[in-house]
Length: 239
DNA sequence: AAGAGCTACAACCGCTGCTTC
DNA sequence: TGAAGCAGCGGTTGTAGCTCT
Image (cartoon, rainbow, N blue to C red; front, side):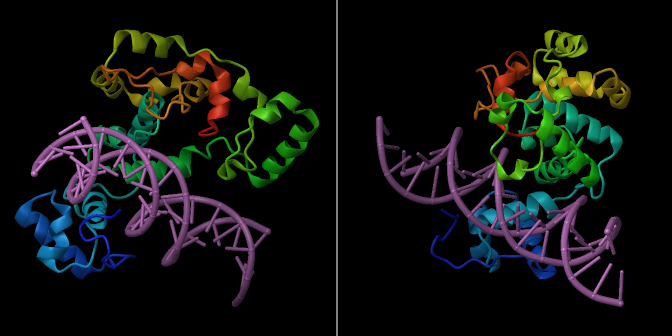
């Protein structure tokens, strides 16, 4: 596909300071949007897509740099439990953070969370080889990225969401309500009230590519809690 | 000291939805 | 109403720098 002139050979790779300057000048003059005309107006040999990404993720004013704070981390965890991989939605509730940043952060920090060290990993593999039931093997995710990651018995021990979370969904039916509810608390202490298993089982039902949204934008969160098979079959985000 | 492995992050790719004609 | 183009999103890849052995 590509934006702008499809047959053009767009420049790829890291942006130079000069390219950044040209893009910033363009956005200052014309505002965000109309990305396909950036190359024409500025002489930048970059696709509109590339320009948009560079601006949104790097050049846009007000962007925070560096590690996420514990508070932001807590919000990311909770918002992911509510919204699944809706990174742009999650990013809206973290001012100064981009969807790309949050996505990267999640993948590097949380997708591996609970993953043991190498030694522990090897020990675990040995144990699982001995103990793993055939049924569970069938249910293992097929993704290459999940190679070596296995589901512990602990993960399957409890398919009930915490009463706190249930209450929250009941009390705060909309996204905004839920977010304000979460953010108005001390997130860290609030998280302490919810067991890790609950986060695990409160993840999005990834079998549904549309994210299980109904027309009122109410997420059918925790749907996988009632159906642990669909959770395992989703093959993603297993701690 | 050096090579292997890991982490973090920037950037690209492909798909989807919206808008316009 | 359908086709085309644009904008945005999520998944994936590439790589520089750091850590480990």
